[in-house]
Length: 164
Image (cartoon, rainbow, N blue to C red; front, side):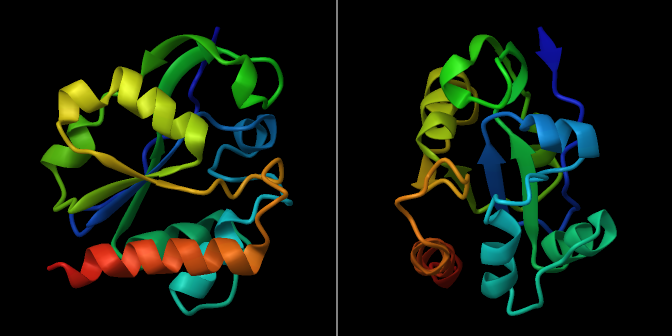
């Protein structure tokens, strides 16, 4: 059983929560989200935020918070082989109440189909908030180019922000 080693990233200005499934081996080693160099998350988010791609944890944290995002994962602990979402079992979900009670979250996005399935199975009943699924930024999702990911993510996030 592996327990999630990364604290949720948010402040009271957060409006959009992005949830992954569970940190990869590389992210667990680094102690921060989306640590695998081939994961396109930071490149896509930088384009959405109209910034250069952050490289340090400090730069990544600043970009997320300054743009009113929150980051975490659906799973608190699980059994997993390496970084493969397909091997996840014996799930204990994260409790999102600390984020939801201390922010102004207007929408929840999940990064990939596995995060969506886990959210719907373990978390949706508690939050009552339907998550919007975004195509995974993982290198395993090779059929989506970085440009295509950016277009989809940017449109979905801007659509939610424009509903205000």
